[in-house]
Length: 254
Image (cartoon, rainbow, N blue to C red; front, side, top):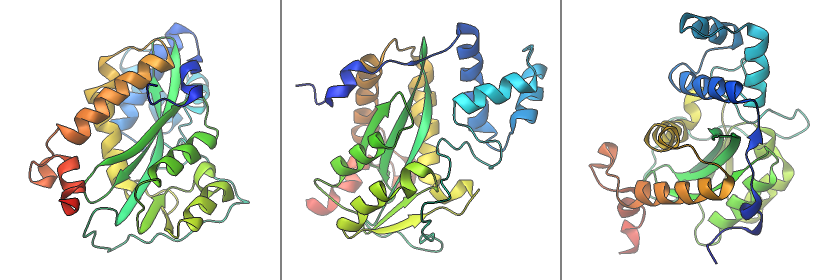
C-alpha cells in the first residue's frame, strides 16, 4: 500500500552501545571528508578531537561499518575472489544521454539506536536516482531487488559497480546479462571511478541523514523517500545548468 517491500516494515537497525553509535557517526562524517584514512590515522584524528579511543576499538567499529582501511575509499562491499571481475568501461567515455550509464553503491546509515545500509542506482547523465533500497544487512538480496525494480521501466547501455561481492555475484550480474546491459567495474582502489555515487552520498548524508535521528527502518524509509523525491524533482544541480535531475532524465520523453 505504501510502496514498500514486505520486509521493509520489519527493518530494525543494527544494535550497538550508544557511545559506540556516536563514535561511528563521527567516523562516518570524517570518512566523507578523508576517505583515505585507515584505522590508525582515524584513531589518531579522533584522539586529536578529544575522543579517548585506541586503534583496536576503531578497527572493530570500522569493520561493523564495512569500511575497509586497505582501499582509498570507504568500501561497504568486500570482494569475493571466486567471482568474475569485469573491466572498467567508462574511462574517457563521453556520457551523452540519459540511460547511457547507471551505477550503484552501498553506504552505512547511522540511526538513533543502530545503523542500516542504503543502496542506490543513479543515472550518470542526469544524476537522477533511478531506484534505492535499505537493509539491515549487507546481504546481496537487497541489491538485486533494487536492480530488478530499476530495470522494470528502463535499462542503461552500461551498468557500473565496484568490485564488491554483492555486485560481482553471478546472481547480480546474470540480471544485467539477461537485460543485455554491458557490465563495468571500478578499478580496485579507485575512489573516483564511481564519482557520481560518491557525491550523492555526501548530499544525502549532509542534507538529510545527519539532520535526523530515525528510530526504525520504516521511519528511515519514509524520510529517505521524501529526500529522494526532493533530490530528483526539486533540487537544482549546478552541474546540470540548475535544472533538476528529473527534468534532464525525462527530457527525451517530452
